Image 1: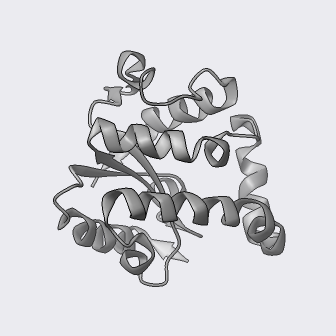
Image 2: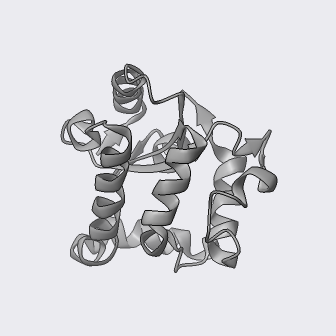
Length: 161
């Protein structure tokens, strides 16, 4: 299990990389103070964010509607083997691509804690809404309804660390 203190410690490590502009937290650790992983928005150059979304577009397409997110928590808790088979392998591929593009070893930075990292440009949102003018050129799957809803939900709840 990961805590808010773990997230803060990991973010301090990540901020030491000059390619990372800022880091924002969302998900269960932000909401409940504890979770199975730490969900982070890592703010980088637009070019890096674009390459990441291009390379990971199939891994990023949200298959489960936001209204089914409580089911996701149930799966993580009571059916971890199912989570491992379906979601963690996609998450690992996304993390590997993020590491390759940024030069940051996110697995080592997690120090045993699973990180779920999304690379976005600094201006990906305005207040608690998506900055669609910026994201249209970066996120090729923004037109996918469930993915867009997922990003909109994150924009409303994210917190800068």
